[in-house]
Amino acid sequence: MALKVHGSFRSPAVLRVVACLKEKELDYEFVNVNMQTGDHKQPQFLALNPFGQVPAFEDGDLKLFESRAITQYIAHTYVDKGTQLIVPDHKKMAIMSTWMEVEAQKFDPAATKLGFEIVIKPMRGLTTDDAVVAQYEEQLGKILDVYEARLKESKYLGGDCFTLVDLHHIPLINYLMATRVKALFDARPTVSAWVADILARPAWSKVQELLEQK
Image 1: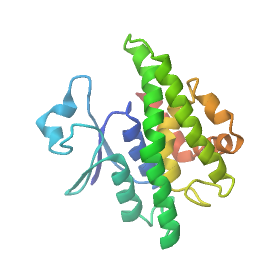
Image 2 (image 1 turned 180 degrees about the horizontal axis):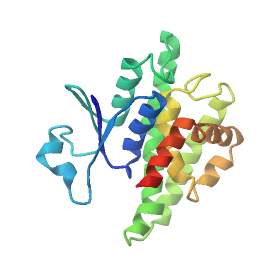
Image 3 (image 1 turned 45 degrees about the vertical axis):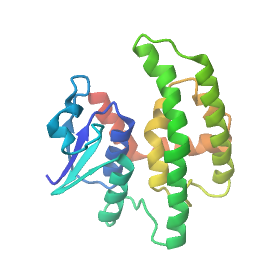
Image 4 (image 1 turned 180 degrees about the vertical axis):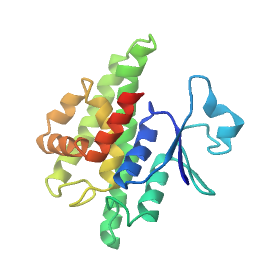
């Protein structure tokens, strides 16, 4: 099998790649990386991702890392398979790329920080910093205000159809729906409807099935 994903199902970045493969209806091999035992810092894995982070990806002799680069490669290379996650029009693609940057540079840092404070810290026996939570809830709220306005103009963030922009949000949003942060999404009706839409994707349901098996 040419396509290989190296990673852990605990990682939202890995799930981003797996969701993309499910949308494209592509077969792949999943190579589990045990991060608790430090597999991601071993020479064999560092040859795939020199930063020692998951995921890593292989398509034949091509080796990639960084989840969003991987999903873009998959969407462009296998454009004739499954869901069309990119748009052919250059202007529409530029708009889509803008919102992909928004997800990576604005949404992801705030959402990740909240997940760490609210979920990961308690799991590790650490104390949640309420001041940090308040700071990032305010920050995420402002981002979602922009999303609310955008989604009143188009059905999805990148345009009128589901694209990589929306897909890139799914793992972290799914994660946050089980926390108090869900209220930030619920308070914005258009954002809330968008969340319900993207989380109901058949491809994401298949990812969820994989998670239940782990």
